[in-house]
Image (cartoon, rainbow, N blue to C red; front, side, top):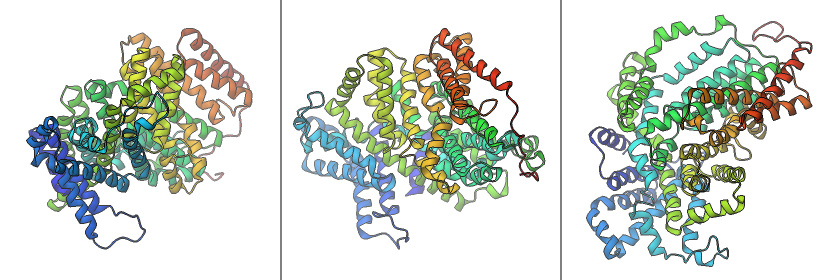
Length: 617
């Protein structure tokens, strides 16, 4: 089934997709069947032997419920006019239930609870006392066929994008990992920054940003690259929670780093109504600022902890790496070039996959045999299963939002609560995104917030759609490093044997840029390339970068020297002032930063830094 699912997407990606409902039916049907065969109903430390009979039955029925839309395609279309039959209603109800159960098995219970509450809201709307949220209510026999057979439910935009684009890019990431590109990225990062102050942490930031481009998973990237980078950071002298937090915050940013980004970026194409290349270029400056913020934070932490880099002789040579393994960059070059040239994301992914296969043939250890190719097809399908289940359940939530008019009601609630004040509306939206992100995967979180919150900000305040969608996208992602539910930080803490909550708090300090940049995008849309002039864009980027320096120095406790409390206060205020719009606030912030720098430069130097491996260390 895994080989069939991957082969289907490669075939339709090249020869053209089926009608959206049929494409989605094959996509979801095979995925549901695989989930019930692979993921047990109850998680246990003891591996199960074989597959229980009821899971085989569930796999068959779930696949049939999705393929029902193909087997009786014309009849289902006609039923929208004449009314659904009893069999249609049974299939729809089973389909929705199987999607929820498959999501529980692969992603977890929180998103299932949200979707279940959404269905309950559609059923019991007349019993809600609040006028703002009440509605006449719908019968269960109206809700399930709407969610299963219409284009605005399970098989809505999120699943359609998953069936057309997301699967291919996830498969592309699997092929890149097979070629050893992840290890190559690590070596490049250490060659570039390993010898500088806090070099191991800086290399981890760069390596995670590069690996994040091909994985798109905060937790997955933290575990994959963290198993290598976290021990090295600890050996360099970084505290365990700092090592884990550095990896977690950098890995979380992989979802916002072009050219691939996270799965939600492909859904953004449909919501914003632009090409993926525009999304990619608009997200580039904010992503670079995000990683620059983490880079600055680990630099100040290394200075404060008196940690230098790795001796040059222990590092790989950049020149040797590029000469011997530079060909490994070919798939990413192909992706960026084809998207920039105006090709569809589908075609770009296919060409990238082809380039990655060619790259894998160069070395014997990565060369694909026939059995290796089959395993690759199977692994590509397995990686996609949680994403497919999550977007299908997100479609349930989005369908209820459209069915009940909850989106307009929520928008009205935000505007009313904010009293027409933009900053308050942004804060409320941010809190909603973070809370939802604690229970929902990034893709589902984005679908929900883009459906109910983004339109309110765009329509009421006239904001740039690109800036607003990146705003909710960012705050959905940072939930992975925002206590108390910071999954990426917890994953890093497990590798580092650190306190999970301390790791989460430290990750929050390191990734503070993620809480500043979205507001900067709203107040200065030139950062997402909305009507930018070269001068205004340059000034905006420089001020934002200096603002991140001030805020990071305040939070990490070091600028040119270890900071005192009043210096931290001035640095924090100065950094935020440079992020805020307006030449006066920018000038005041810059003056504060210069003042603290001048005062600290006149203070005696602290004890000298020590190099890794030196006798004093």
